[in-house]
Image (cartoon, rainbow, N blue to C red; front, top):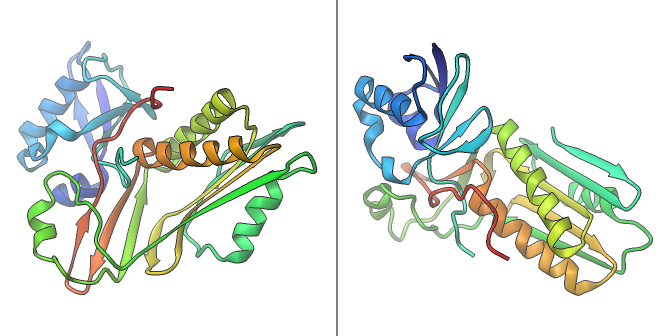
Length: 256
């Protein structure tokens, strides 16, 4: 059978390719596919203990069995780690706006997200804006030596990369969890991809609810889960190099 493997972030850089086709025996698992891939491309083995996998856009276990024509995504540490176009819909009390953009996010875009999700029943609207800063963050596992070379240097920009279809699905699931856990049904998420200059917005979350407590709780949960689970990768750009940031992806929601 044939399986398509997609690579991202540091794995993509190591191999210099985004896609690899594998011929595998029937009944092969994700782990079997990974071993075949590493045998053919040994440079990918670095940091394999912090990788996660997704089968056809859903996080999966290495023991899961693959089928012909499956798409296997190798998920290196994601942008925010565990640090604690888009999907959308509206059905009365629910309003949701989830999208990725390669355009700058300014005041007009932030206001548009708020207007899309807010109703006259909402007494609280919480807006979170994440911005690119000029101080370095935490390097991804395996990037520590690279990061050490830029100690004390100023970050000049961030570069975001995403597995877009899966990222939108994960963000939509996070919105479902916000509704289940906090009773908050109106949520907007807008995330940048591509190059983001220092001082520019990289992510916006707008939560609208009847009361402020639920709105604050929902906003914190949404950004924390986005950072821990969405297949979105971030590298810091310096004048003479770059460093990938993040931690191993978490495949499910945080415990209540």
